[in-house]
Image (cartoon, rainbow, N blue to C red; front, side, top):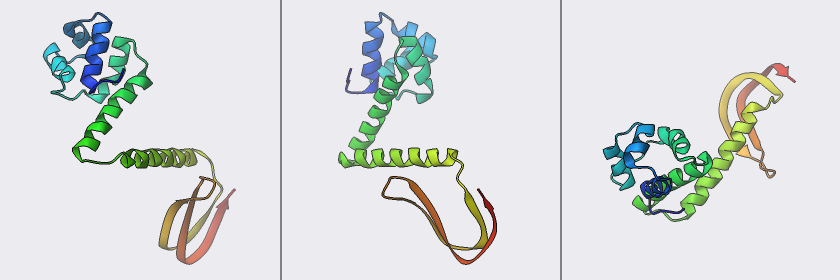
Length: 146
């Protein structure tokens, strides 16, 4: 379901499941007045409660996160009058972060050097792999891990 905002999404699902505000609020721990404000768009939902909400409404957590964060992004894009290109940039950054995270978990043979760092950077090569390099003023190889 694509609702105007996340609170409407919660309200529709809650009603479809036959739950009252009080019943759902008891499972999530905000009182029913606060849950009503969330459903009416007058208060933001606390992302720390997404797992509880998924369990309470028997929803797929990934779909619920998509609805929640999509709502958050849309509000910010609208507030700052950003173009749709901002979403493309965000997607590129997420992919970059994923690749960096993958590289951190791999054991890469590396040369430990002694020197004064002049410049360093992390770049992406033509294969989409992460390259890290440093330029040193003076370099003295201490040991190699391989």
